[in-house]
Amino acid sequence: MANNQRTQQQQQSRSNDAKQKPVHEIRMGRIKAAIWANETDNGTRHNVTITRLYKDGDDWKTSTSFGREELPLVSKVADLVHTWIYQQGQDGNGDSHQGDSR
Image (tube, rainbow, N blue to C red; front, side, top):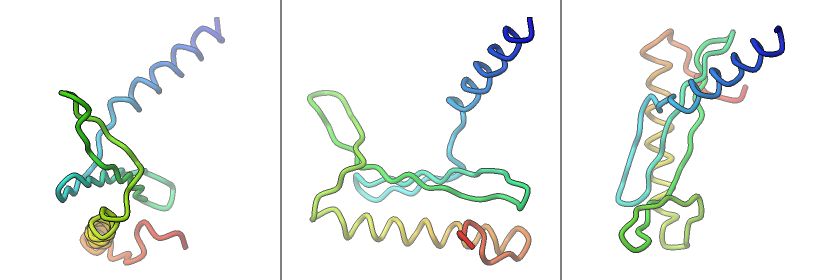
């Protein structure tokens, strides 16, 4: 019985993870960054995923691969993400190292 309950809890946890949405998104052209909040014992930490949107026939898809011409835009989006995360630390508890690896 305990194994069955544990399995159900694990499935529910995975289901909740699948429904989790980013706390913020930044998009410029076809480059999009999603910012995810992770609650820890030391406060909120942020992780970021950066993707490129492209069209394959009639379907929109994403990729984490970027060409040379896209890198300046990736850099700009990453800079905006960094600014947004830094501001969250300033607005919240004054911790300017929010999301920092220190």
